[in-house]
Image 1 (tube, helix red, strand yellow):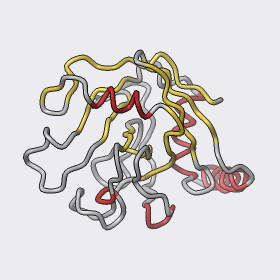
Image 2 (image 1 turned 30 degrees about the horizontal axis):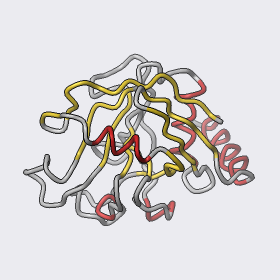
Image 3 (image 1 turned 90 degrees about the vertical axis):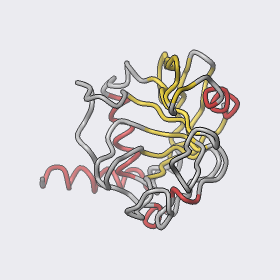
Image 4 (image 1 turned 60 degrees about the horizontal axis):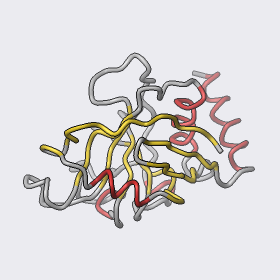
Length: 189
């Protein structure tokens, strides 16, 4: 625990020297470029980069799309695409990370925001989502999740929103894509 805390402090200090880490997701439909904000969401960015640096995202794919028409059970509607290693336990999945709320990071779920998918606070690990249009109900205090803690935003799409929207428009059943969108690679630029 002490080693982890020392590493976290070192990481936070080193990230304060950088403002943006560019990353590219190369999907079978085209690239999505991201800007990650380690100075604002150091724990969450570090988690994402650990998946990249340790080559744990070899099986990354987009598999879930949420649009205004496919969430009849929800009073609060959102628009996102979700990807990662999938819903089932995967051998490349890391331990869950502490939840960095938008109240702490000051990052909001705006059009193109990348954020961590989770069940309960502190359960996020490998799954991410990208917002389509502004999604304030995913922020701290938002009503989409009953616990009110929202989700952990950690970056934004800098180019490639047309690919994100193309993925969202693919055929799906109950929010699950009929055919997943493969990701060939995710790399730091």
